[in-house]
Figure 1: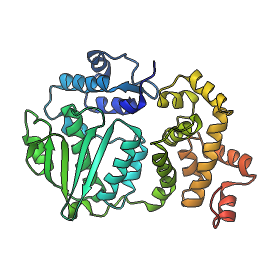
Figure 2: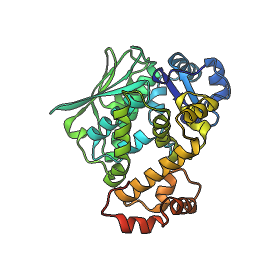
Figure 3: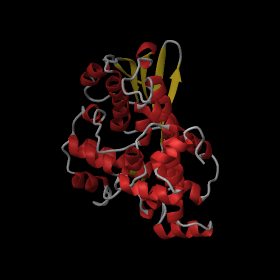
Figure 4: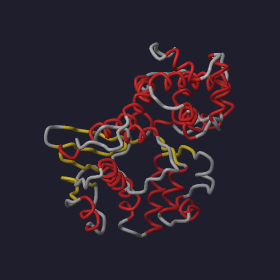
Length: 337
């Protein structure tokens, strides 16, 4: 039985990285949470919110460390690729970054970032769409991540003006030291940054890379509220899967909460195949990246999930009869088809 994707959470490699960096045995955590030992294998899977909350409770129980969210929120690894995080790090400032993160969280998962910007401050609230409660470790680690993210991107000691949590950790001192302000209890998890800190320029800004990603991400958001064909759903999933090298039908099926045979049947009913969708998506994205950015063919090859740049060259020859460099030079003034 598939899990409702609107009320589920994807778990996989990110959990393995975090558990490893926290010094925890994933098998023990999974056993305590009542989950199979294979849960994180491959590209992971989607689980119910109840199961997701149980995982956090298991981690809290295994560590017994009141500073767990402080440690987990600061774990960022190059082993992971997250399109929303990539879009955020390319932003000009924190206001833009959290707005982008908020847009994409609303699209792809069970959690949201609600962003309220005025002339004095920026308030960011982390919520679950379907449940008012959040595990303390999840909500607090998200706020820690946001402040740590702002500090990394600006290379400035950003301090929070206010931090609100649903309940206080047993030891508040380490958090108050990290955030630079006291913790208060409220109905959610919110961090407020001064307008000055929220508008500090990111040293990681990359407008060209954002322009390469933006159109398709915008399209996905516009389509999220309506009923999409299976092909459109697969194309949207491939936007996240390809840069991490996940190019198999089973990867897309898992992301959509379907069985491989079910996905194959639905594509067949729409008179298309997995390879047609994969190749069509790759071609469209390749043309877009080459036209809208200065990325090298090697970088484009990576984003399309090819094993090496030569694979892109061969595929591009089939699609257009020419090389990526020649196509870019000849069609630089014309929009991609």
